[in-house]
Image 1 (cartoon, chains in turn purple, green):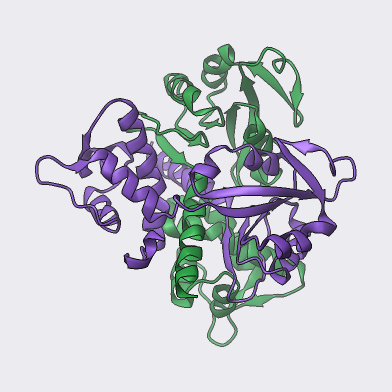
Image 2 (tube, chains in turn green, yellow; image 1 turned 135 degrees about the horizontal axis):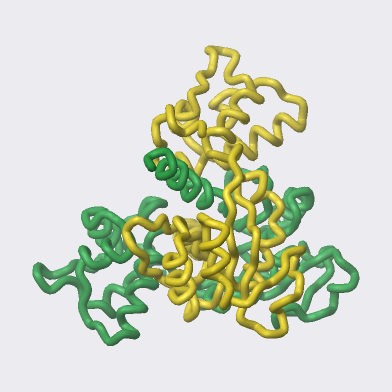
Amino acid sequence: MPHRNQMPAPQPTLRRLPGYFRFLQTLAEAGETTVSCTSIAKALHLDPTGVRKDLAFTGIIGKPRVGYSLLELRDAISSFLGWDDIREAVLVGTGDFGRALLGYELFRERGVEIVAAFDVAPDLVGQKVRGKEVLALDALGDTIRTRQIPIGIITTPAAAAQGVADTMVEAGAKAIWNFAPAVLEVPEHIILEHVELVASLAVLSSKLAVRASAE
Amino acid sequence: MPHRNQMPAPQPTLRRLPGYFRFLQTLAEAGETTVSCTSIAKALHLDPTGVRKDLAFTGIIGKPRVGYSLLELRDAISSFLGWDDIREAVLVGTGDFGRALLGYELFRERGVEIVAAFDVAPDLVGQKVRGKEVLALDALGDTIRTRQIPIGIITTPAAAAQGVADTMVEAGAKAIWNFAPAVLEVPEHIILEHVELVASLAVLSSKLAVRASAE
């Protein structure tokens, strides 16, 4: 567990690290071997000082005028984010978003493997969706309990999300990754990450409005 | 345009405002008429002082001991985020994520209407996907140019994303909302929002790792 001897990073840093990883991966594929804070900052439209601070959490220090060793930095980010350990997850709701997540091959490389999918639709149960068999929602609690699965992913309609979260919590899931457009109530000890799709849209729309008023 | 006389809010505030809106909407549907910073902060696992600062950008001030008028605050957030104006968007890539976004009914309520979808797959072109006709990718530039569409949404595989972005920029799109797992290069004047799905996962995994090491 690489985290044990490392400083916990603040959330904004954690959110930016996967973007750095992706950019470094692109450079590595292009044959680059070193990279500077300035070039990372420029490519990702960030402030170079902030980038330097973020990267310091990984324990890798750049050299003056040379920058970072690209592969060393890339692997340090991966290890810092815990991508070397695979954690199991279940997914509930095999609609469009559920399918998109089930088919997203990168998750395994990012330390999460979706081992089972659940739905209530009788015509889906027993079918394979994106390579995973869909189980009946009734089996959700037992699956989490028996296999000690730590992560529950919710991609149901808003109205079903709280009930699914309750089942996950009761069965012993430790973290919930919620894509349903609903505010969930979970006990304090549960890690809850809500992906608010329109949050990013709010930033984009607001910048567009500012620009429109300046023209 | 409600933005013109308002302070531009920082990005973290903009990202949190849609979550406040959703929570207020839930309270309104439950018949509540007032709300306090403390209860918003508690429900969304945020700091009350931060919530107060965020909400101040909307121009609405809470009353001591009473809190905010719920509907007034909800509508002020909506208006601040520009959801009263509808902006048109095109979407390229009708795979699982593309379909999920095409079928996401909330976008229109959040100020964005997807008016056309594009794909390269011959068997999809001409078909309807989630109620929208899919056009051939060749027609993307002309559609943006002729209809002066400001927003391009990219849900293609990583390898296709830069080419699609180039076409959007050349045709006059002002903002790009990118869901493809690729770092895009766009001119400085283009607004680029990249939705990094694993960013939220990185926060969740990191918290799980911290917890595991404490157990």
